[in-house]
Structure formats: structure tokens, C-alpha cells
Image (cartoon, rainbow, N blue to C red):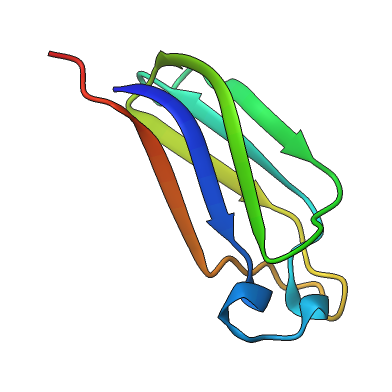
Length: 88
């Protein structure tokens, strides 16, 4: 796939208190699950969604590493969407 965008729905998007949102995350992609390319690293989540366009590149796997939330230290993500094009 040629991946170029992601949208993460945080718990507050589903009606939870914003204090339940994870406060930081990093998004990585890989073609072989051995070498990983960091697409984005966020240290502050603001709002219900994290929507990011990034430079299109070939990938088969996506890894999301989530840091704990502000309130109790548990990591929560309501949903994640990955966008791109299929390689023929």
C-alpha cells in the first residue's frame, strides 16, 4: 500500500471525558515488521481526533505506540483509520 494519512479517534470522540484521552503517541509503518519508519510523534493530544497527512510511502504494517492518559495512566484509543492506495 501507499499510505498517506491517518485519523485517530480518542476516547472523548466517543463521549468519554477528555481526561481519558492518551496524552502522547507515535505512528510507525513498515514493509516487513523489522524496519520501522516513524511517521509522526505527538506529545500533546488536543481534541477528539488526531488527523494527519504525511508523505506517501510504501508500507504493509502500521504500529501505534500509545502513552498513558492524563487521568489514570491507561492508554486508550477509540478507533484508528489508515488511508492510502493499493499497489497493483
